[in-house]
Amino acid sequence: MGRAAFIAALFVLGLAGRVRAGVDAHAEMAAALEAQIDLRPAPAVLPTLVRTAPVGPDTASVDKGRGHASGSARGASDAAHAAHQADGPGASAIAHAAKEAADQAAAHAQSKRAKERMSHGHQNH
Amino acid sequence: MRAHARLAIVAIALCTSVIAPSRAHADATTTRHLLDGVHAFKDGRYEEALVELRVVARSGDAPPDLAFYLGPTLFKLGRHREALAVFLASTAPRDALTDFYLGQTYYQLKLYRKARALFVALRARGLGPVLDGAAARYVAMVDATYAKAPGDATIDYYVELGAETVRAPDQALVAAEIFDEARLVEALAAAPHRHAEIGAGLGAAWNAAGRPRAVIDALADDRARSPDGSWELARAYVATGDAARARPLLDALIRGGGARARDAAALRAGLPR
Image (cartoon, rainbow over all chains, first blue to last red; front, side):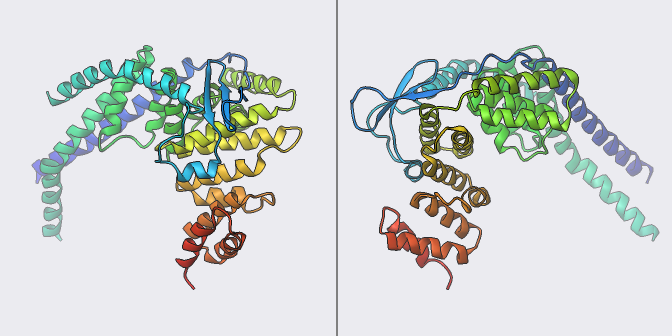
């Protein structure tokens, strides 16, 4: 009887510890988030899509402020239904951004995988 | 009575000795990764923070407010689209700090009207003096940018970006935000521009994201709706079980004989009588 009560008490204490750890993480993160907010935003620059030379009737160029990518204008509703179909000729309007993201992801991938392996190894010990 | 009490204590002891330790171990591991992620974020080691938080995300007991940790980390890494997707997918109750980072994410993605609306709402809810000042500066930046009515080329940009984004896998929510930005920008334009296309795109994105109620909210009262818009609205009514409202929309599309006629006929045929 006494032993069971002791184990139950340990369980309750463990739960309390877990809750406290969660609260600590949240409070610490909140402090870090507040400290690292960008208080002075850079000026906003409106993006524009610039129609280019007559390569094709629907061909357009998107000026993202960082470069240009051309794309074929299609109805948005059609686009949703063509979600998994192959793209038409020409780079997409977000190709430039997508490539940047892919390059960025690739750059991070190697170190990330290594660190995750380390992390899993740590977890198994 | 005494036997029952003894039985209950034995049951608790059994739980604690067999089930709880394995759960507690998993919990402790997740909590450790979460704390490691927080500490890495705090030190500006955002890549390491992301690694730790990804481990937490994959665990079975990730905190429901994971976006609070993961979204800002992706933001700091400049992975703004991913950050936006994380913020949007979160079902945890919103808090001011998460929303502030969401607002900054909108801003970096040039979704300025969305950013402005969020910062205005945050200020109305009440922020401390530092954050309130920062939110005011974001709003002022957007207002300065929109001092003149936006041109067609800006609306075109958002429509094209939305159309491209809705085709990408798992990007429907992000696409809906882009089309919503297009809608907000178009409302400020000197003259309507691609209004029906924006509505149809917004409807397509919300439907793709599994949020038919949002489609109905956006399109039900839109008198300038295109056939594509009506198609998306009909799909949303069908998804919500409102066949009575879907039927006349589908009938009109079938009678019109346009690109949506065949799809409309197929959807109409499946409706309950």
